[in-house]
Length: 191
Image (tube, rainbow, N blue to C red; front, side, top):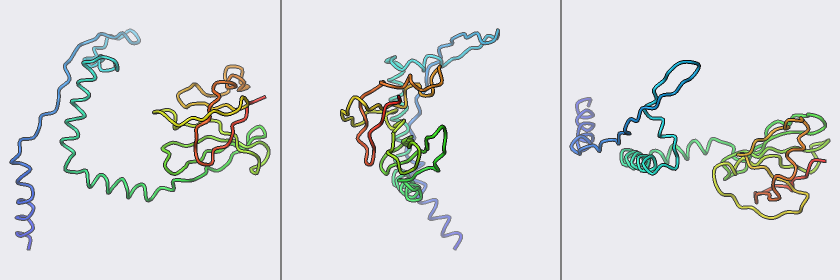
């Protein structure tokens, strides 16, 4: 029985060794001297930070093509694992609300959205929801719809917080667009 299993494994793996594996792309080294805290450092791959450099883009495309080629045989497994993990995650959910300065702050997730939505309600949890931050706007385009002048939305790529004065008034008027999300409410301006 053990011999049969070994022969089956060998017969399955043999075609993988018969094919010549593609060689990974190798990024050329371009030494750059950097001074940090009085220490001289050499970074051979510093240029890879240049996102608009055509040479860097070309190298990254080659790297992505290589990865796709190597991982091609595992696509079905990847899909199966992704669906299994997704099936164990509660996609529409709320965090535990926290009371702070008369507002209940919480985050919620919506099925189909990759990131959470940060919200608050004034006074009670039955009050109108105010969307503070829609972090799905960080990575790409999102559907926007015009709202009234009293609405404000903040994309996650922005600097967000109470601001230098600590009042949060710096956040007023950053945008008059609210993403079109299921269950999203109008966002009220701060006084």
